[in-house]
Length: 269
Length: 257
Image (cartoon, rainbow over the protein chains, first blue to last red):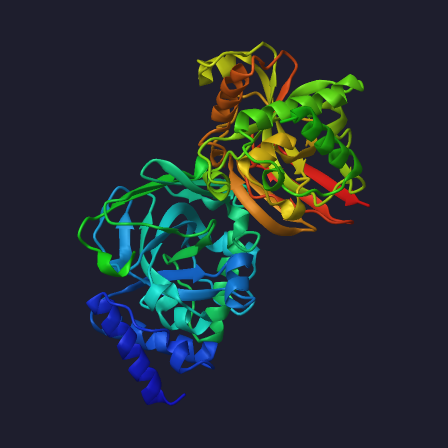
């Protein structure tokens, strides 16, 4: 794909995000779009946001479960950029502009040291991690009705929306990251449960994948970065006004309320 | 309608591992009460042959499963001593299309009865809590059924295994217990205790309340299997299924012909 075509597609996604409307899947027009091209489009928009004054605070990992990978016909995860403007704290009213949001329970890793690839493994991740904290990721898609294929979601910043971090991080050496149970409630009702091992067998394996993937693209995870390691259950659609709470047992909890009136209700039936 | 004849038919299919067509396709007007009557008549046949009632099992304890059969309450079935595995090993012989699911089991020291039971009554009557796996096996074609069918078929029970180590019910928050089920080392399902009606103790409450409608109770020494914490997965010859319960150990189940 020519550079100007990638720039056009990036501009379309950027405009859709700003206007809170969806566009048809990019893969309808470009069925053969490669993963590499899709990441190039994602990077073009990441640079645009940085030029506008936003700051990269970390990364999110997506497609970390077998069912999701099977659905999109891949056998590796994907990643997106996290910006300062996307970050909320537990108990916030989340007023981030969203189109068709869903929420996912996750564990966030906060790094104490840089993690340069390419030979990072799960042990190296745990050594470089300061703490883990429960996180709620609000995913969103600029692609109409979430009809995404792999290249669509990668180009669209891995369908990132915003994220909410708990406020009591746990030192990683004290945490059991495989059997730790997660209970997701929307408006007080249990909607999903899961455990850390849903993320590639161990969330640190996903973070190691990210470190190595970034290294192949010429960048590095940095000390202080936040990494959302991947969903431990299926994503759940949410509406404005919903109260969302994630309890991660001994690892603590995180909750938020989705602001009224910040959703274009028309596009999310 | 001859409920005894239907119970006899289900008994034959349960004991010969032969699928059958849904009852609701062949008999009109069967009610849920009829279905529980059929279940009792059918289980009575096993007990006449010398099997012992050792407890009860709850089914359809998650919102998703209730929605899949269009109901808003769980169901229950009988647990007989012949269903209990002595070792964590299951043979496929005698089973049709078995699936396994992780559960928490309660074991009781006191009787629990009545329709006004509360969680605190359950705690007072509970001796211990034990990790468990249940092998379910619907006798209906394609594991497909309506509420009436599955109730008549003893809520799809086939086999169950309780882990060797018991735990105090006060040590661990049972709604928060994480569960990871792996097949041959690969993660297949994860969940947490809250998948069972928000908290497994709620399942025991519902069990006792539903039993009171047919004049039965949870007796001292009995087991209650509270319901699947994750979706059930199919098992095949040679599978090694491991289920880890956060803070409550692990069950390693092997499967053979």
